[in-house]
Length: 278
Length: 277
Image (cartoon, rainbow over all chains, first blue to last red; front, side, top):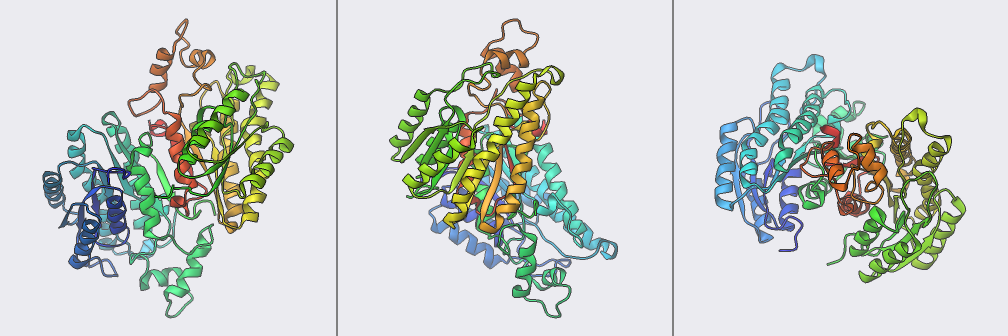
């Protein structure tokens, strides 16, 4: 494993129970990292699809361990800074260091801005933007104390760089993540800690593969399915694919986390099949 | 373990030294064969020597050291005919084309209103039109291959923000970003991706010369590499004077590889935070 691209490093990943978070944990472990895996593992009132479960988080941990890496998996809500701090502190105590942060946890719940209940706005912004800040706030002291620099990769979205109707809260939160990235990049550069975003288009995960999202994308279809969703999603991308896979985002995360990107900071990296230039 | 671009063929301009050589060697290290092109002759509006035929031969030797096959040819990115001959010959010999690094570029400086027409024209002709010509001779091979492909154009931080004293360079490098986005649209249906790398100052002969030292250190009588390092470091966030060619090559490798199979139309800064300072 000594030849892995992040060999010997420790990565904190939020939203790690499934989807992109699990893919990041596994990809980084494949390249030699140990992982602190965090997920809320509970459904939320304002999120119209089931979230990851404790069993999902345990499966992520198993996949990391199968690669010969150590893992500390804990349930924590990115809306609770105290809980995040406790997990990160415990993880660093057990795994010995912290080098990489993937602030990945996020949710979505489509609704027109004018009809959106305040609680929906508040939860999406609190998780997708506030949760990213809290994750960084809990991790940064350990990165600075390590004195070896570090790499924070915040999960934004193509919606962090362009507008999408009917997800005003998500678009605002993901734009906010891009702003947070640039400010953190400035604040942390003296410590050689780099901060970048990945900005994906639709990724094949439960966050978009659910009926409310199908209805958003296919307003003319009575009972829209994944098959109805595919051509509509593909029409948004420049490349002839309906969506990207979690692994594609993980490969970008790995690049940004590794020393190959040692002088890349403050950057928003789209993994978007050309959605921004379509 | 197979390399990250195992079995692919890459066409690289400005390959005799600097970033171009570094790209050739890094891609070869990860399993690619190389078509290496360089002008290998001085240019009269440029105040530092260009690479030589010997430099290009050294690039070829370094590629071969990693077990890569190489076709090295002298060609000028201002001359479509010579470029086409080089790439056609390279594809005939190496069997395919997958990756294009349109890297060749020059730098000169002066206040906009004092640039000679020739200085302006050579800059645009090499740093922008040369990139377009490189793409035009390569794209038919990529499409004919039917396996998609990755084109990486070398822009600059100066393709995303301005710097005084190099308006022709800024205009050309901005133009490369526009060209990249249009090519990304045109070629997406063939699964051919097009992106730019946008470096800050890179430690190569293009910036390590007296003319650039004077531009960056106007108040120093005889500025040195050290004086320049201090002034250069002040334009970026991370505590370093400049980045190395290998850092740009690692970004090129990522974009060229299947790890970036769904990344297209993107300007990727390798700029130590110059854009967010």
